[in-house]
Amino acid sequence: MLTRKQHELLVFIDRHLKETGFSPSFEEMKDGLQLKSKSGIHRLISALEERGFLRRHHHRARALEVVRLPPGSELADDTAFEADDAVDTADAHFSPKIIRGDFTRALPGVRAANDAGAVQLPLYGRIAAGLPIEAMRDSDAHIDVPVTMLGNGEHYALEVAGDSMIEAGILDGDTVIIRRDDVAENGQIVVALVDDNEVTLKRLRRRGNSIALEPANARHEIRIFPADRVKVQGRLVALLRAY
Image 1 (cartoon, one colour):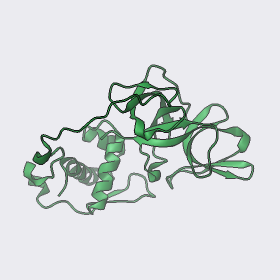
Image 2 (cartoon, one colour; image 1 turned 45 degrees about the vertical axis):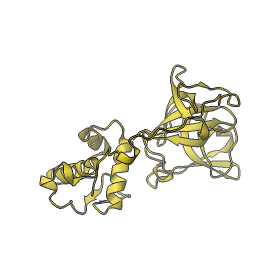
Image 3 (tube, one colour; image 1 turned 180 degrees about the vertical axis):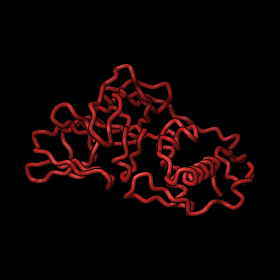
Image 4 (cartoon, one colour; image 1 turned 90 degrees about the vertical axis):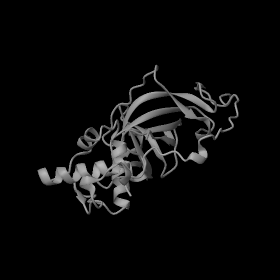
């Protein structure tokens, strides 16, 4: 069984392939399904792949193949899908217990959020997970983050733009939570400042007197710099995703 959105995307891709001979772009799929973020398309495609309806050729651009359509897909009605927003009646009267408290005492640089158990972190703007861009700080923008995602130290948030970290589970449109730091261990995902004007989110590797900034996508190349051209701005500690 498919969810309604999974079915809509599968039919959209199949129709586009038959009409044009190639698969639609992520932007076209996002607009076609009226989704706010391309990260939702990534999730739908992954679900369709896992269920055997779709095949993705990872080393070719815009290469999606419809393996099969669900039976009667052209005439399917509302009962043919799994409910996207179904509510179990057993949970209809569930009332969770909330423990309130001051969670911000050990967290410099944050302010209390309206919801219990959360703090507000500054949202500095969009960071390229593909080609580096300058991260622009917007002092008026904040985001609520569960305090359980944070440890000691100062934190901030950045919105991801690009697909170069998708194999690490970081998608376009995700919000990453960064602990401000100027050091990192080999293999950690960091916010790196290159030549004092380019900021990017990559996995850091030290190679002698050089630093490699590694993507998590085979379609993107590893960039290697002399160590003095790269400054660590923080380390990835958590990720938020809107469904």
